[in-house]
Image 1 (cartoon, one colour):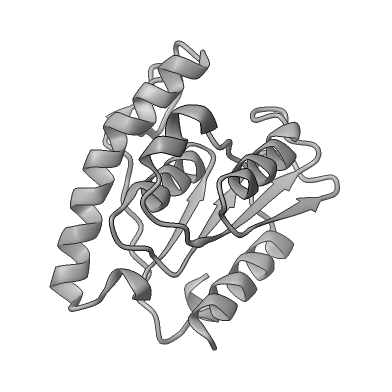
Image 2 (spheres, helix red, strand yellow; image 1 turned 180 degrees about the vertical axis):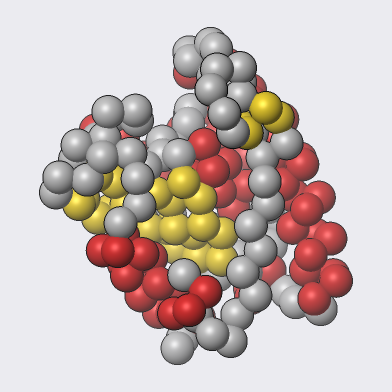
Length: 176
């Protein structure tokens, strides 16, 4: 994305916890995939991400309105939750292959309503493709301007079409 957004800072935090199975890191455990456990994980991780965002914004002398959050899978779930529950609205959110967790629990916590772009492959075998329409519908029901983009034949990855869609959305919301 950074090559398409040359006048931007691209800061990519690494999730803090090692995965229980396989290599890599995670924002929250996936051992219990119930809605309640996932929502609790997102809420706990949100405090870590908010601290990180606040630190980076101060360090770079930027405002929330100059911030776009982008996330994949767990990161998408987290990006949507963080953006909606921050006091100040960011410019936009691009959520790849994630879910909008517990809309009924999140609704009373919504403090800002940035524009949100949800991109999801219809061949995703990790996060169900139905999550795209469910997220867009729930976001709109909560007064959030949300747009969904399905990508035919795409699994649980981000491809060039997804990057292009995300970059266009970010640019549109920054007025570029």
